[in-house]
Amino acid sequence: MRICVMFEGQEGLDWDGWLALAHAAERAGLEGLFRSDHYGSIHHEGQRVGALDAWTTLAALAARTERLRLGTLVSPTTFRPASVLAKSVVTVDHISAGRVEMGIGTGWLESEHSAYGFTYGTASERFDEFERQLEEIHRQWTETDDVWPKPVQQPHPPIIVGGRAKPRSVRAAVRFADEYNTIMPSVKEARERAEIVERAADAAGREPLAFSMLIGCAIGRDEAEAQDRLRAWTDFTSLGGPPHLVGSVEQVAEQLRAYEAVGVKRAMLQHLVHDDVDMVTVLGELARAVAA
Image 1 (cartoon, one colour):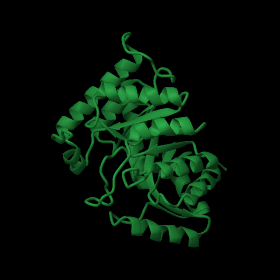
Image 2: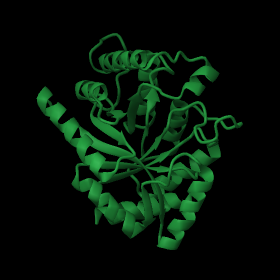
Image 3: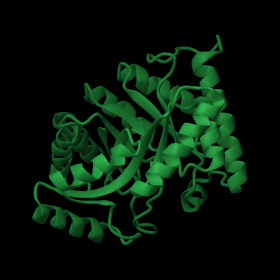
Image 4: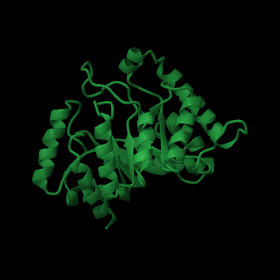
């Protein structure tokens, strides 16, 4: 299983913080760094907490890193016209010499749409726009002869569609995506969703999509350190229960092997307490433990 780290940049993460976390992720040997693409806070809604723009940040990080893959989980199609998103991704692809990935979704946080003047619409309208943009971005990257430059990665940067394996997201992913990412699953849910995506790809006569997950974690070198991190995680957010993965490196490695056994090929581990740069180093130790 491949291991990446995922940060929630809308929770007040400034540029110095981004640099510290990205450099730690690269030193730790993690495969990639993914970030949310929100303009408004989720965990501190109503407070004066903001976000640096996702794709502008990734472009800057691309120039300050050498090996990390960089991407979003996920960019809402309500934020940008298809051509702007396509061009932003291609720009980061060129700056990074081919290390970018695009996670794309419909958008769901109504408060940020109201604050920034984005059209929210109904769920059906947002999904219609999501499908239209996926098709248009794919066309600009691969088919049209009047949009340049093309991406460094050929035929295009990896496209990730996220969801819970519902019919419309799976259908769109099978048409255009390279990877399907599911959100905070149990092992049972991961198995069920992976099977749905696999059957859909097979029915469409295409190669299987990579199957990955975004999942929260509080991990330590031993159980005591893990419990300290769990308390910090709980202090940070009151949303929902504890993260799915809690424990020592060895304990969480065993949990991840259970996910791997049901089809999860890559884990994007959500790290919420951004001041704790050392946990990124621990994630590198986890990645090596899982590989072993």
